[in-house]
Amino acid sequence: MRPPRSSRPGPAASFGARSPHAGIHTWCTAARFALSGLAHAWRTQPNFRTEVGCAALAIILAVLLRVPLTPILLSCALVLSLELVNTAIEAVVDLVSPEFHPLAKIAKDAGAGAVLLASVFALLVGASEFLPRLWSAAGM
Ligand SMILES: Nc1ncnc2c1ncn2[C@@H]1O[C@H](COP(=O)(O)OP(=O)(O)OP(=O)(O)O)[C@@H](O)[C@H]1O
Figure 1 (cartoon, rainbow, N blue to C red):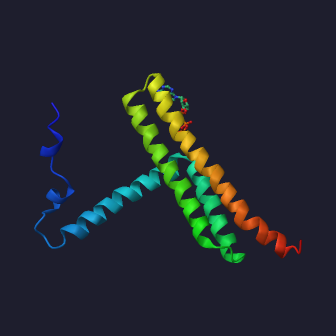
Figure 2 (cartoon, rainbow, N blue to C red):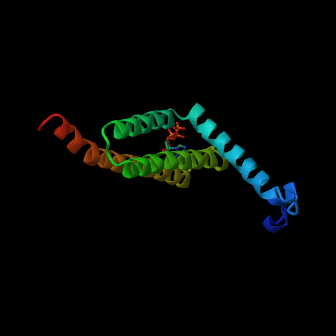
Figure 3 (cartoon, helix red, strand yellow):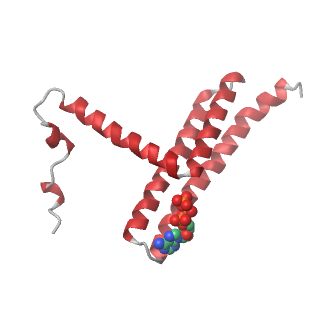
C-alpha cells in the first residue's frame, strides 16, 4: 500500500535540510527535472517544436521592427507553457485511462482547447503589434 503523502520524504529531506547548500542543490535538481520535461516535449510533440519556431520568429521580428517585446514574450510564454501542461495532461490520462473513457476525453480535449485558445489570442496580439508597424514601414 502506498504510504500517506505526508510521510514521504520531499526533495529537501533527500539532500539534507541542514546543509547550507541544500536550497541550491534542491533548486538545481528541480531545474534538471524541468529541463528533462522540456526535452521530452521537444522530442515527442511536433506542435511544441512548431510553437517554439513561431515564438523565435516573433521575437526576432519584434526586435528588428522595434515592436514592444513584453506582449510578444508573454504570449509566447503562455502558449509554450500551456503546450507543456497539455503534454502533462496527456501523459497522466494515458497512464490512468489507456482505454476510452468520456472523462479522459474531456481532460484531453480541454487541454488541447487551452492551447488553441492561447494560440488564437497570441495571433491576435501579434497581429495588433506587427501589422501597424509593417503598414507604416510600407508607407501605407
Ligand atoms: N483514453 C481516452 N479516452 C477518451 N478519448 C480519448 C482517449 N485518448 C484520446 N482520446 C481522444 O482522442 C483525441 C486525441 O488523443 P491523442 O492522445 O492522440 O492526443 P493528441 O492531442 O493527438 O496528442 P499527441 O499530440 O500526443 O498526439 C483526444 O483529444 C480525445 O478526444
